[in-house]
Length: 182
Image (cartoon, rainbow, N blue to C red; front, side, top):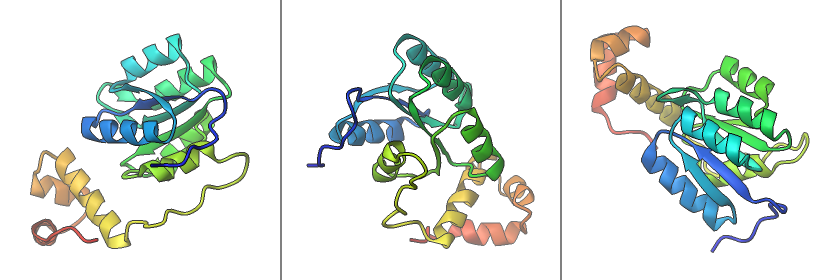
């Protein structure tokens, strides 16, 4: 059983992500940590919840099926300036991190982030940085995850994926044929 965390009076948490299995796992993990969780799988659903019941905490995916998660962050910032917001993305990029923080996100985490990393980011105060993750992914694993994501976004087209990654097609085929690194 997870220890009770000091979440303050308002324990409301909104999770916005279009990856349903991830959303369900994260919701369950955050409930065990004492949050009162509400979920949304789109920008529209997230904005509707934020407009009617602005939560104290929010975790929002950057890329959603119907748009950009930063739109939800913006509405939440207007409705509830004191909320703590973490933006998640599988597309780690400095430009989007800067945009997320400028719009009002408290922190920015690359997927796959676990519930502990997310909780630490939500509860970190002031300039205090959350502790580094206990078991961070290896550089090989991060590279492999990135290649897999681009491959999926290119509808599993090896030639198109290789072109976008600026990689030789045969090299990519060898990487895709191997098991994922730890």
